[in-house]
Length: 476
Image (cartoon, rainbow, N blue to C red; front, side, top):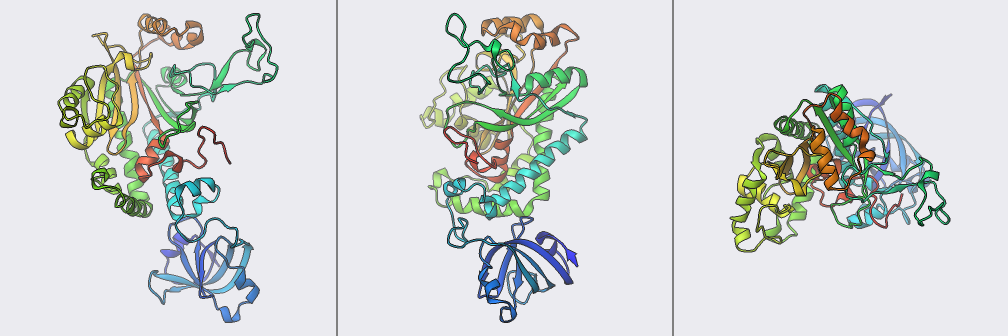
């Protein structure tokens, strides 16, 4: 008896004895079961001899039911599939009530499927998205492993706010109704579990820097949390970040690494997930047809992915980009929602996409941003106005990677922290790196869900993570 997956059986030659377990997608004419086990988008057709099958069993073959099927794999007699199974034995493993089962064989809205996120991977779209998410995860670990990086688990509970934005989830065991108070009425965190105020991490970067300054090349890939009350299609309260940090690497090396990394992981899924990408490509094409012509993407999903893998990324300074944008037609004709008027402006997605899709027609790396719009840990340039930051811009999405050469000079870092009212005692260990064997080092951060959105063509970030955490929503 050969026990294979649906994906394996669909590529097999005829076999006398096979067994397959899966979930019924459809059952028609009391004869044809379309069976899927999650290994592929495609179902395998199983032909039931209904005249010699118990009527009660036939009634239980409903959409969503789990079944075990034994039989012979033969060349298909009908159209649409190369092989099919002639069923010799069928067993119901788990019933599915057709009156209440939410995922019926029809088109469902994404909003409805979010409300049934525990079952949405039984649809083709979400099974394809989650298989791609899994492949991308593997490709990321594979890339870093093959390039000599050490994988590091940074703390999820921390006393620091790496981004300095203050949008953190607090972690406490104090009685919410009656917390211990100081004389001035503030909460006394000395009596809390950790003896100080703590929160869920917004980034593992600072801790990763400490390991890079001893292990040389490290990366993190873990959950991060932002308490930003932003209910948009691009924001999550819980998401995953990839953050490599490398000792003795400057900004140019950082850009080289980020470009090679992005090309490598996207090339991996183009090779290994062709079926899922082709399906999502068609889905996106159908969706684009419903939009006004002006809003449609010029590139298909596959074209967007090969656009990244087959083009060298153009490296452009922030200053040059501002000049290009200021003199561009959409800016002069006030077509941008945010008009670029002066140096120092924070670029919006529309500006980033213009540079990639219209002006350079290739992925773009912007570097040397104004210090005022970037984080305290970024290396100050000699002009003392800009920092050695870099962002990678992709078609259809804008910024996807953000990184920098880190500030390795103790005196400069202290000055920057003082200017931003970041207490030295909070980050004494981070400052120690600059006291004991300091050196040039760099790194970047990639929001994993942003990458999954890009690779799948999904337009809402809630549809590329198994169970989205957003304001007012922590279901499942």
